[in-house]
Length: 199
Ligand SMILES: CC(C)(COP(=O)(O)OP(=O)(O)OC[C@H]1O[C@@H](n2cnc3c(N)ncnc32)[C@H](O)[C@@H]1OP(=O)(O)O)[C@@H](O)C(=O)NCCC(=O)NCCS
Image (cartoon, rainbow, N blue to C red; front, side, top):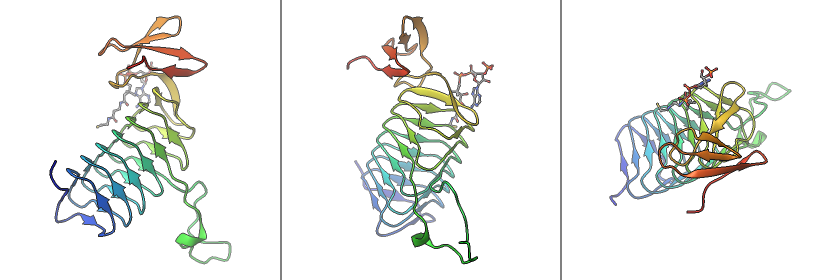
């Protein structure tokens, strides 16, 4: 692995930590105390808030906005112009009209579990969790937690199917069995949850 690569026009705070082989492209900003693992890609114009934790091999596409205190596990994909929000009831000023500062409100981060992907221009409401290997469709508004392997679309986002680790929708085989068209793996659905085959 090579050292991290930071384009000269990117703004990476000296207190941020970038793992080996991570690339930060033009005009991206990585704030203080953010920690990114190995092999990540931070696309042009993307934003990583203070203290955000990001695992290995995570892709943030152009202009993705990851507000603190988000946590992104290994292998996560964040599409272009996605927004991971951090304030459920945002206000710029308090009831006396004074500008609210960082200490005047408590940020609530989004968690994106291992391998999950979020499609272009989707918005995730503060504090929600995107389950492992789930897929959020382009333009979705995620207002509730998304189960592992769920395929969700729309505003508000609703589950329309299941996806496997390969990312493709699974085919319903009946009897709670779902097959991946790419790998042939068979997943099991029970009580609204999908369990992958043992590896
Ligand atoms: C969600 C997604 C994976 C579904 O793909 P698919 O399995 O091929 O689904 P289909 O195109 O057959 O659509 C199935 C249904 O969901 C709807 N749908 C598909 N994508 C949708 C989306 N993003 N938002 C809302 N509805 C969507 C379709 O209109 C269709 O509805 P219908 O059954 O009423 O006609 C895909 O459309 C998507 O959004 N992928 C993410 C793309 C992206 O942002 N990539 C980022 C890198 S650039």
